[in-house]
Length: 291
Image (cartoon, rainbow, N blue to C red; front, side):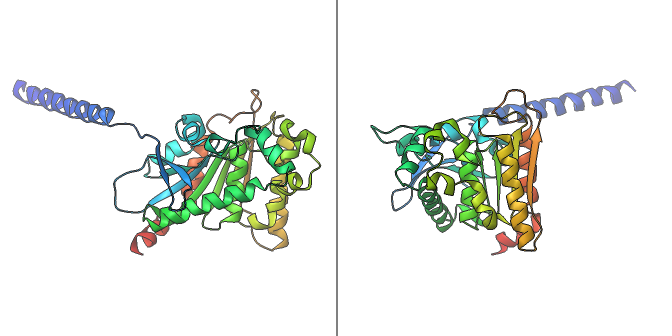
């Protein structure tokens, strides 16, 4: 009996040492870093969770600010943190008026957006063009699986992520966290709220392009920065567009209690990651690999 008991103790200790060794090895693995690269025609982009594997990876475009501020910050990576554990690659670019897209002597950030739109510069079209060039490049290089592409973004980044999904149908779904949906209600745009281009880029004008397509939106119930009510109007417009085309609406709008105002409600990133994975059944991944 003592011999059996001793063997069990030894086995348990061996198992504990094996688990501890594995945990230590995992802890010693370097964390993903932000990598910078360029397309052949000079569009700079950033990668996070890039691996040396030869198989094309499912890819999430993450939009928030500049390349480093977006991919270098866990908050702005949002569901990219969870999807990275499933082998997803995160990609971003400098948004208009951010990072290297800022111009000396011109306002930066959202004030820069307002300035450019008031001067008839379509920042949305310009951003979509750069994003599509990056996507073309990643597919051509065999880095991105063309059948598993999603986009997400926070606030202004959520606005552009949805625009990108509407513009480029290779982006199968989009998730937006506390997104701008109508720039005219955001304080930086008040002076130019009636400008035709400011009105044109409102997401409600993309309702027909998004009809029947998977879009996931979360916003706090007290977001007076970008307007909870405007997010509701956007979702209703997409639903109406789907109904007019006699197809099922696939937009999800989650309004969550959030006393902090304009921020991402708690646990939203995890929920968005689960939702994105549901848009790509395993059979799709197998078919993509077979091709």
